[in-house]
Image 1 (cartoon, helix red, strand yellow):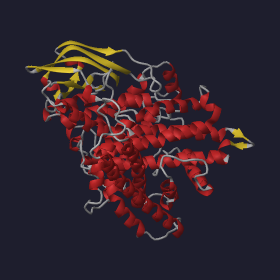
Image 2 (tube, one colour):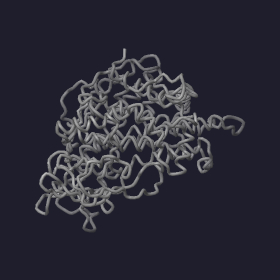
Image 3 (cartoon, rainbow, N blue to C red):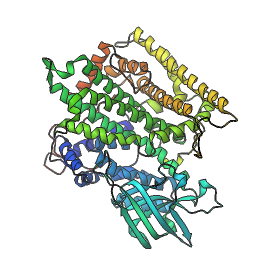
Length: 610
């Protein structure tokens, strides 16, 4: 029998699916057709946002101890996935609720009670105001000021580009509170500003800017002109702003994986639907071997992305202090898996990819544009890789010195988890990563498996060989870190040509990229080993896992990589889940019934907000 942790997250996703209805029904607030129409007009999807709010989405960002429903990190992953598969504009507009996490990380007890009550009343639409026009991701170079004045601060400056800049009710921002004598890392403080409660001055929205994707989102800015606020709006200690910002980003980067899973599902489903109905060369287009293999590979990548995401959600409960490495690894690799799929699926569609018709190929184009933003959100891919590169020496030093532990809670989707405590996240995890640390134990567990129906000796031997290869590659990469450090010790970087203070060796960035791929492989191995006894035969047989482990980089694949029999079985499994209206997933999660109207539209809607 499944535990309440797993059952609740799956049931919650299915409840939201029922609440939102079938996205094929044009009259539903979150329909594909409606999302495309709004996208063409660059219009905020207000009706869809209202429908998500009516479900109580905001409640899942407030911890249970404060009266909310934030019980499991996986709940946020699943809810985000449900919304993003319909319309990223809605998902991105409403997922700004996650920034209230900073109150649970840095706020005192009184602040937490106050903000929790406001969120639960539905009175918060937060925006994250870190970036400034001239500085981008270099937060340490910010010039926005928050001048202390008795029991108040005076805020001046502009933040841009940010999501919900004009339409937010609350602004989470960084402002300079120190002076020239203050160390650079301690010059900024964090504030959570209720725009309706400023003492004086003017807060104005900076005009929205046209964007490649997320055309219905409020990507704009916010400006403060001598705005006076009470000191009680500051989160954490004065000078602690940058540290709090980084701690929050480590959590939100991890949650970004839900956005990728949602868009990735719809892109694959849309292309598979279209090609199954299109007749070419006297048969369905999806029977063309190249097309079959492309769809099979895209499906496989989604399974791996899901494994990486699920393990990361469990890790947030169990190993919260380790996410200075883990959060970056998960965000980079899940986005890469889905982004690679989008390119392959676009190529598979051919000329239809370029036609802006009011059919589901248009939905594919929208998801491709919108989903691309995940690699930019909450720290772009280069920023995440740079963060990883800086921590590689600590990872290399710590690896192999981990204590024996029971890895079941991390990988078994039925296992109960302790409470999620976001305040425990740390800027520097001392090189620890539980996923990599678990690999020797996973290999030992794999060695103890006996052949069974569907898992013959040959495949078992191949899986053992691939797992050993992953272990060897990990050791090689970590040894390369030490070699790179020795080769540059005591001399300036050869790539340093100017005054930039960013001088990370590109070779370390390359190592970080390859480690991201390995991390997803280990996560998939762990999920398989600890869940094959209770999931179905396709999952337990491990053919999908062997195909994933065989890839050089887990997100990359080319025509002819898969054995034809393997490609056919993956393709068949994908079509079964498509026909059964299930997520493309290692486990069954049901989508809304065909033709289902959203809750509140007819008497048949029986799902109520949680």
